[in-house]
Amino acid sequence: MKNMLITAMMIAISTPALSQAQYVPQTCAYGYYLNTENVCVHKPTAVPHEGATALCRDGLYSYATRGPDICANHGGIAELLR
Image (cartoon, rainbow, N blue to C red; front, top):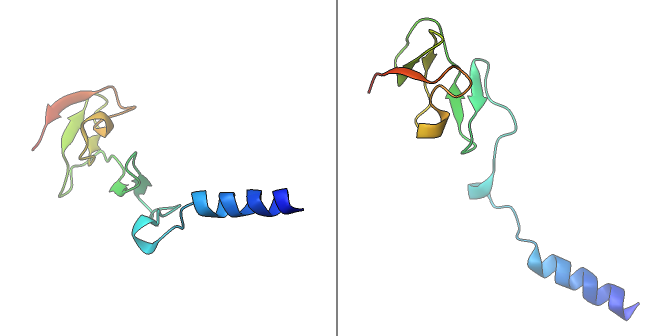
């Protein structure tokens, strides 16, 4: 019994509590997706809107701001917009 209590205490001490600053949304609003940095980003679109960062090789506009995410799964970058 003593070993079980010590093990439980060790797990509690080694497991950090999730604070408000570390909260990661599980879903994003319609038209957005959760990127690799756990930030909601506008999904690629056929027509550019404010905030578009690149035109992808498949003709869609990307809104990703992090290099590896820009036009990922869309054939790569055809043209950087900003």
